[in-house]
Amino acid sequence: MISNLLSAADLTGADARQILDSAEQMDAIQARQVKKLPALRGRTVVNLFFEDSTRTRSSFEIAGKWLSADVINVSAKGSSVSKGESLRDTALTVAALGVDALVVRHASSGAVQRIAGWVDCHVINAGDGTHEHPTQALLDAFTLRRRLGDLTGRHVVIVGDLTHSRVARSNVLLLTTLGARVSLVAPPTLMPAGVAGWGCGTSWDLDATLAGKLAGPVDAVMMLRVQRERMSGGYFPTEREYAVGYGLSPRRLDLLPEHAPVLHPGPMNRGLEISSTAADGPRSVVLDQVRAGVAVRMAVLYHVLAGSDQPSTAGLPAVELAGASL
Amino acid sequence: MPAQPRSTAVPRAYAEPGKPVLQAEDLSRIIDRIAHQILEKTRGGQDLVLLGIPTRGEPLAARLAARIAAFADVEVGLGTLDITLYRDDLRSHAVRPLGRTVEPAGGIDGRLVVLVDDVLFSGRTVRAALAAITNLGRPSAVQLAVLIDRGHRELPIRADYVGKNLPTSVAQQVRVSLVETDGTDQVTIAGEPAELLDGTGERG
Image (tube, rainbow over all chains, first blue to last red; front, side, top):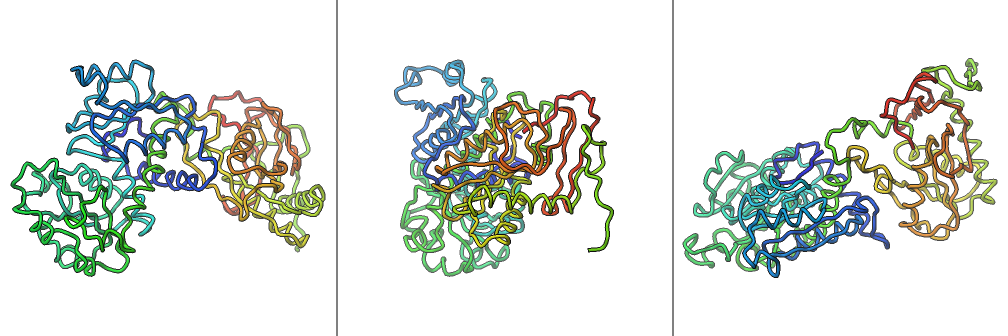
C-alpha cells in the first residue's frame, strides 16, 4: 500500500478500490452511537493548512479523531509563516515535533510534493494550488460508485473551470484508473494547456456532450466551481455569458439520462455554473459528496498510517491473512 | 445416506500433517451439537444474537443460526463483526483490508451475544471482538463459540462452545475450509509439529 498520497496517480486500481471498499465500512460507522475506532491510537496527525478550507480540514480532523489519532490543526494565519518562516522550515519544524502524518494544503502547485521530499513522516495532499486534490477525487469516486456501481466503462463529464481546478486533474487520473471514460467540457479559455496528454476527450460544446452526441451516453456530470478568486479577468466576457454557455440549467439537466447523478465539489455558485434546479434536484449528490468526505478520509488515513512503518516488511500479504488460522 | 467410510477424526496428540482432521459430515454434526448446546445454555435461545467474525466465522454463524431455528422455534439475530480496526498488531503488518460489519436487526443492546469464529488460538481476535462489541452496544452477556480450539492462549480467554479441541504445536497451521468461502468443508493441519516458527505465523 501507499505511504504518501500526493497525487491520484499514486494509486493503482487495486489500491483505489481497496480504499473505496474500506470507506464503505468506515461510512457504516457514522450511523453508530459511538463513532470511535482504536485503529490509529497513539498516532499524531497534523493538518498543515496554508490556504483556507472548511470542509476538507474539518473532515480530515473528524476522520483522524474517529480513528483515535491525535489531530492538531496548524493554519498559516497566526503561525510562524506570518512571521516570514520559509515553507521548508515550517514543514521541518512541525515534523520535528514527532508527528506521524502531515495533511497539507497549499496555494502553490507542487508545494506538497516538495514537503514530502523534506520530511520523514507520511504526507497527504489536501489540495495544492491548481494541481491535485486526490482525496476529493476519491470521495467523488465513492459517491459515483454508490449511485452507479462499478465505474468500469462509465462515462463521466467534467464541466467548467478546468484550468484552475485541482479537482478536475485528480478526478481524471482516478476515474481513468478505475476504468471510467472522462470527457472534459470548458470554454477554450478555461481548457488547460497540455490537456491532450490527459487521456480523455475534450469539447467546447456542453449541449452536444450531455446529449451523448459527441462521446456517447453520459453516466454522470460533475460541475466545477468558477473560481472567482483565481479569475484575473479575461477568461469569459461576463458571468451571464458563462452561465448560458456552460451552466447546468434545467434544460440541460433534461438532456441527461435518468440515472446520471450531478456532482459538484462545492462551494457552489448558484446561477453561475449550476442552477438551483440541478443543485437541489433528486439527481444532485452534492450533500452525499460532503458526507462521503469523512469516510473516505478515514480510509485514506487508515491505509497510509495503520500498517507497519517499514514499507514492504516481510509479513503475510494482506489478502492472504483471511485464510490463516486467526 | 450411502455408507461412507467414517472419517478418521484424529484424537492423537499431533495430527498427521495435510490429512483432514475433520470432514464435511463431522462439521455438520459439530454444528448441530453446538446449536443444541447454545439452546441449552441460553434457556431456549431467547434474545439470542450470533455474531460471526469474518472470514469464516461469518458462514459458521449463519449455519448455526439456521440449525438453531430448525431445532427450536426462536428468532435468532444474525450479524457480522469485523475486528480489523481493533487488532493490537496493526502496526506490525502491512495494512489489512477491512471486512464488513453487519449489525443484527434490532441491535445487540440487552441481548445475549454469541461470538462465532473458526479457530481459537492466541485469543487476541476475541479480545479485539470484545472491544468492537462495546462500540456497537451493551449486550446482556457475551459468549464464544469456536469450531476448533487449538490451544496456545496468550490472553485469559476461553470458549463457551468448542467444536473440537485440537492439540497442535505453535508452528503448525490449522486450516478451516468451508463451502461458502473455500468450496469444501474440511479442517486440516499444515506443517510439522516440530517445525520452527518462521516469523510469519499469524496468530489469532
